[in-house]
Length: 320
Image (cartoon, rainbow, N blue to C red; front, side, top):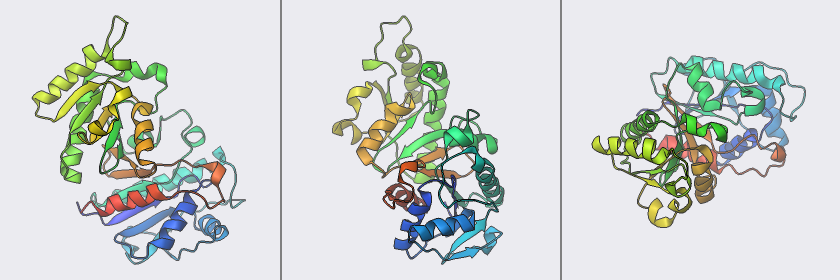
């Protein structure tokens, strides 16, 4: 896969992302791809200056103008009254313009681009229209069956349901959904990552058992696993989530399918801290979100951990 461009959306203007980018470009001198940042130049420069970082941008209007040796920037015109402020819906149009501009220029890239977006406030920007940025981008690109993959080269996880209230989880889990997700993830690993997958599937109920008349394990999860085995996939389960994440299991399997968000994201973040990234599988391009939010309590303190962004860039470098 020949990745030529990395497009970075600055995202929520009131976050620690400017600090993280400042730290990265201060330490990484040689760029392997053409980096294009999409956001407001004046605000970004003021934030970097306040945090004692400097990035020399090349202002461009089109991707063809980008140079590999420089950090390129497409400016999104917007007026900000303060360098750092509180998150509010006043920035929604700016964030929307950043995404629209990025998606517009991606259309002519022939799949040789990776999109990395900075943190977005689900509460203010997405409101209740979308469960997350994954679903937002799926709608914007007319995609279907998008999948959240929290990736580390050694061990990764993927939830069947994403940002769904707990009381609705059982309604969203189906045999077809599990089968489709696993097949698509298997293709992604083989075609894009050039890696073999050993899948493990977790149950939904504690110890994969229930006193209820309806068992999701018996009616949904086990039939899905049997179908996938017949198709030749390396897949086992269901496993009880409370004891699965032991060393003997995470060395045997490299991709775990969980039934809901926190069932798999809590353990992988505990295991790898910020050395993991959120990849959206199923879009017309590879989209990555570093594993941190706006982190408003740390804005301006210069103490944020940039490890996940480093890992994102390292991942892109490994794609060829």
